[in-house]
Image 1 (spheres, helix red, strand yellow):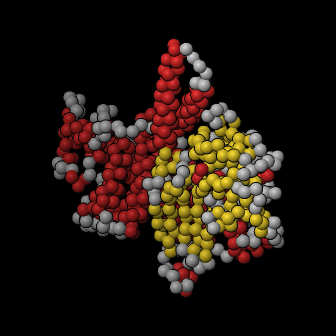
Image 2 (cartoon, rainbow, N blue to C red):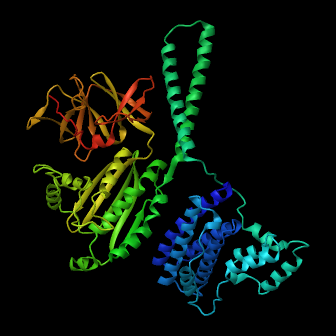
Image 3 (tube, one colour):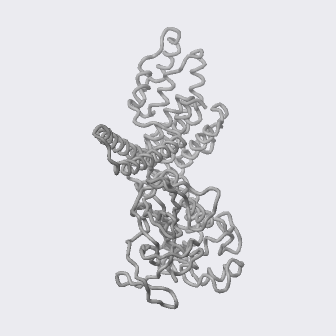
Length: 593
């Protein structure tokens, strides 16, 4: 695939995705002229590019769909379910063709527009008797091209790009004149018209994501190198120098400060290029929910909020499958049938909300429904029956809700095309853990269920608190730290566990050295962890904060440790995982002696 066709495919796929979102808005708001105009422009743009690439089937489909939206926005035809369905099918056909091109299929091998698609589009257009039948572009263009002996048929392209409603009535005569005059010169007006539809200024470029990742890594290492140079310079400044050396030191200090500032700005600018709004991901789900709800015989509305929230590109790309599984789970398990909802005194139409917002250095993504909720006792019994837990496991409701993430767990007796195999929610938990995130479930019987995912806004650079215990240098994500407190020599105890009151709350005190398996040491500094069940983590010392470039552990699996980093002094740091801290450091947990 040449570069021009590749660029067209990428841009057209984005337009096709936006088309689906606009169509679902139009289905709810038939009188929205802005949406109608946006849909018309999208198909018109795709058709223009497809015509230039000689993709006749795509041009034909877009032309008929464009005629449909021209009729809808002028009032010549009403916005009916058949019109929405026809446009969705046309959008799907265009997306399929673009997908084939992206996968390396030659343009000549693409299938023609299906008769069924042409029939439903024509039926939607002919809802108004005054609308003229659409022109079969695929049959007109080859005939004209043959008559002009291989020369580009500018008039045919002009007819394909300009809506039929505004074409001059003498267009057929123009074509005859073009054929007769083809050996002498080409028709100029159509050329000018075609040029007027092209974009004048290219405001963006497309860059391979791997190049951006490499650039970010280099920028991060540059910041670390500049910080280390500044630390070394501070140590060097402790020595006495003669006058010439003093001047040189002052110049060196200024140069390093400038290099550090530019390295930091480069890092921030590079991070900004990786940030993308989650709306790019969310806009794929309305149609999925609509079609699955239709298959299940349920009436469901998907409410999306916070689509403008920005997050690292890697996070956006990795969240598609987990969110699909969560939405399917809500539709199949959470949402009741219309009859059940009416019997429960609820509205026949259920609502699933997909919400995103920023909280400190994390992005929060919530999937909630107003369905029947989860029964924690039923979950325990199912897990025990499948041999996934013991009799004394999952005692609290929160622990029972977490059972849905176990591989092989399902409340369905028989697997269906939608769910029941016990792998969907396991995929969710695995993806969230991979991105150093956490997921919580809140549910009330008869009221609904809420899944809350917390993820770092960006993955490679993390604001951290630098700590030390038993001689080991460690880093903790700032996102879970409330404050630092001084610990006494002795603690009150409840059930043998050390307790310290913080702002009137009795909090459990846990030893960081004991949790990680280090030798016992004197730990007189504590950090209050903002977990669902807050606690105090005791350690030897707190040494400040730093934004660190995190390198994941690829060869080792150490409980609680998610990666490594370098301090400004060049010391190797172990990074404690966000999810591990929020879960209460449960793995290998031991209390302060």
